[in-house]
Amino acid sequence: MRVFQNCGLTPSYLARLDRLAPEGLSFQERRNTFLDDRFGALHLLQPVLAGDASAFLTCANDGRLQGRWACEHGVRRGATPEDILLAQIEHHRTEVLYNLDPVAFPSSFVRRLPGCVRKTLCWRAAPSGNADLTAYGAVLGNFPSILDSWRDKGCRAEWFSPAIDPVMSDYVQDERPIDVLFVGGYSRHHSARARTLEKVAALAGSRKIVYCLDSSRLTRIAESSIGYLLPLQKYRRPRIVAAIAKPPVFGRELYELIGRSKIVLNGAIDMAGQDRGNMRCFEAMGCGALLVSDAGNYPEGMIAEDTMLAYRNEKSCLEQIERAISDWSAVRQIAMNGRIRVDEIHTKARQWSLFQAIVASL
Image 1: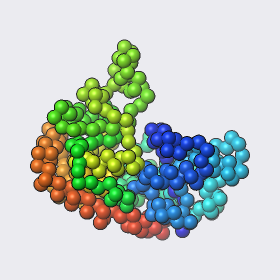
Image 2: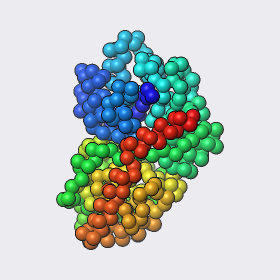
Image 3: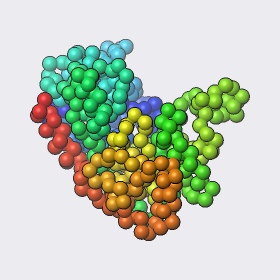
Image 4: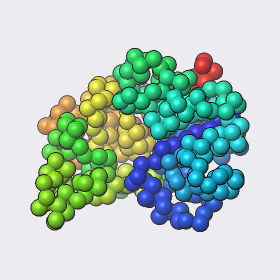
């Protein structure tokens, strides 16, 4: 199976990759830097991570990366990102396309694929407005309710899951000086999570609380000294959150930070309903931290009071955090159980086997 996987990178991560892989590197060198940093590795298929000759990986919205490939392969100047991606797929002689950025490359793109492509799949674990993904052979995701919403739009949808990155074991530490870590976004649009983050931030006076938040340009302006003089209130985070906010972290830097944390706090965004199992759950447990997350329907191996702790509301969350920090020697066993269970269940081998089975069924 000649499989081609495309990733979409966030603006914040692209800035990090530019620092790690400055201009002048070849396509292969920049891609290797990306792979070594492990960003999004939970979604990368086993042959891609192993460097299998039949597998190809690119990040189509990385202008530097794609520009180098285009230059090295004689693609005309001014080619669009879509044209470069199509050229890569044809050059690779792709049989199976797996796209992690389908909103940027929807059905109109699929219809332009070269004849060598036999099967098409994409990952989308979120509602996406009017995005048309019906031309894909299957939309994959691990939130059943969102899969149902894709089926309602006329797509075939199949359950699929992230898998533990094998290098996470290098970041499991005994000493964990950070009491609570949260990494992600703060938004009033996700009301339940926002309220919880505010309550936990109030513990910063007595506990080591670390928030690494990805903020928009308008938020950064709104929270500047000049910004407080402007009518930008809706873009400002509560002062108690902004006071402890640090820049976002990614890849191995994220693994290292989780490895130094007792607790990783997680909270589903409002659109998820009762489905749970976002990437942070896998990252937290894979690096040996105690996952404290909101109650709901979790993937196999993520079980409240056995391999993680769950909370019902802000008050319950604070109680679980205080319980864990105050009696860490006892609660730590739950974190250890979690690491063992996800490492047994959510393996790259199992993920690849399931992917092959889905492809065979199309």
